[in-house]
Length: 315
Length: 232
Ligand SMILES: Nc1ncnc2c1ncn2[C@@H]1O[C@H](COP(=O)(O)OP(=O)(O)OP(=O)(O)O)[C@@H](O)[C@H]1O
Ligand SMILES: [Mg+2]
Image (cartoon, rainbow over all chains, first blue to last red; front, side, top):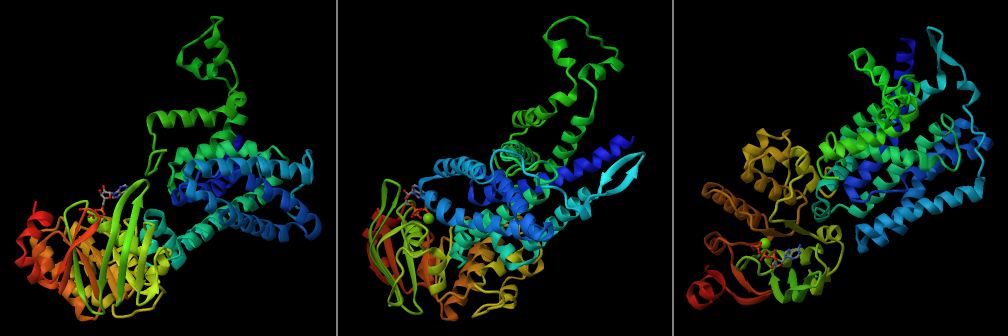
């Protein structure tokens, strides 16, 4: 029972982290039509910058400085990169962001080296928040929840309650019309791209010491974020939110479940004993195929519901 | 001259759509742009707004605006009402109107009360998502949205397309109200009756150029032009 409760909480923490990444990605996609492959690379940069800044100034200044630097980097990428290749169509944009992934990967390796960084949870947040049936829930995870929920609320308020948010929403559906009404749409694009990168950077700051800050972290996170975006439906923030939480919980549970599929079949009175490939697959513990689960889900959803949960357009 | 278009060419990719369009709109004037489907009337509007890259001269009050980014063209004082309306469907009626303002709270000839007095339907549905409005209501909303930005010249592309006769009449009344407030109009129309009734001057387009220019009386007197370029 305590496993269920703690795993649910952990799943929520991870899901919110995923949402911070996926929301930016889906906003950028629905507005500019660009599937930004480099989004998870910004997440990685956020983690590394947070590590470096926190060594000099401490964790809490890093929590603010690193995301802002990532936002500025995003703005520069949009203005000097994407905007220029935009004239050559979506394939060019896709290749451009794909190239960025490798450049950032190399850049990080050259600057910080190949080994994991000693980026740790700040001492002040390093204690168990509460204990259920002997299982601890670390305070830092509670802090992560707080930060991501706060950021979510701030983004929502910005989109729904401010004039710039109104213009962003207008440009999401009819960018040309927004432009003919006198709104500077290229600037809106830059703001959205930079905002998405800021969120990704923030996710890196709080995720870098929750997971590990190492050169493979973008590669590990990237595909999962894509799965979330496709699963939730391209262009839908609500779908994206649901998909993030579902994915977070599923992945957390998959890791702790110590059963194989065959254990689920037993109570149904089915027993498989024959020595063939099917049995082989069925006896693999769920924990070991947990990493594959998101992709299996993506394939299923693409087969049966190509627009994703709440998507408004085909993927 | 308020709007001066000279030798305007425009392309969609490889296909050459406008072959040197010449037209003018004077201060306070209502001018119609007529022609059959596909002759390039909408493309002319889009090229003036910078939504399609224009080649040639587009001058607004003496200032060269050809190829300027659309929002800058709009900020010079030209408003545009597209034929496909482009309502922001998830936003409310009021939010759509707010987006017409170039700056929050900056009203010119038009404000919310004007719009809601002219169209009580929109008043009653201020907080409704614009996407669920009827076609006629959406057309009124589109025009009012552009008017909120207080343009001195407005390009209106087929405002009566697909509307019932009663609504066509309403559009006609709004056009008259726009003119009364001193806004110049370039009206693209298919329905000759409404266009001929309100405009002082008109152009007929054919195959990407202007093929006739004159007053409604000139057009009425010229059966050849009507047969060759307008009647279907
Ligand atoms: N996006 C586009 N890509 C390629 N060709 C286009 C595009 N839009 C319009 N055209 C072509 O350009 C020509 C002129 O189109 P335009 O929309 O200006 O016509 P129009 O006079 O407004 O007629 P209508 O609105 O009745 O269709 C047409 O032959 C049309 O097929
Ligand atoms: Mg047209």
